[in-house]
Amino acid sequence: MTYKTAYRLITIADENNAIDIDKASQLLGVSTSTVKKYVQQLINEGFVEKTKEGKYVLTRLGVSIKKVMEISTSKNIPNYVITDVSTGQPIPLSFNNYEQLYAVITYQLAPREVLEHHLRNYLPEWVRSSIGDELLAEKISKGEINSIEDLKKYLEFILSITSSLTTR
Image (cartoon, rainbow, N blue to C red; front, side):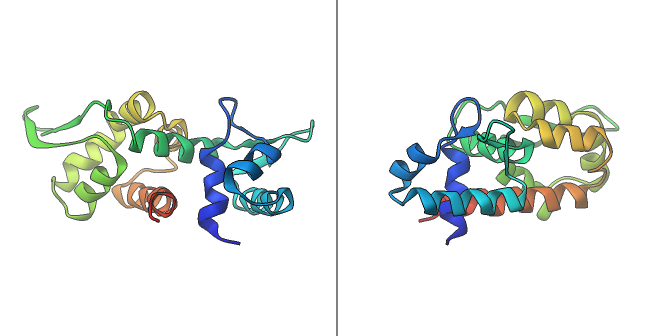
């Protein structure tokens, strides 16, 4: 059982974030019993849950992954412009996806105090409105992600999954 194939189930969930076993079987070209094994793997990892009605639906984490995948193929994401906290002037640096944000953090392309300020004040709204990642916005707002290191770990987790889906 490959993680990549199991994670593909996230991307083929319908508009209600439900996974139809028969449809998934056809789309993935595997048996329904194999799809059920993949779904169980996703349940164990917290991406999917089984409802009282017996349906399989994405959890908030699963929805976040799905939205990031949809965004990664979209070209209509507004740039997030980083501004200097002390002057209010834009730093000649912007990003419009998680890969670019990860690079900004990893390669220290903006001063740490500037990034920390944006994390606490502006980034949650951009994440919510532009990326559609309600889970990350909530984690920042609740203080579960309260440092650049926390954000970097979250991005590494999300990007590891999404990159496994886009590499062939």
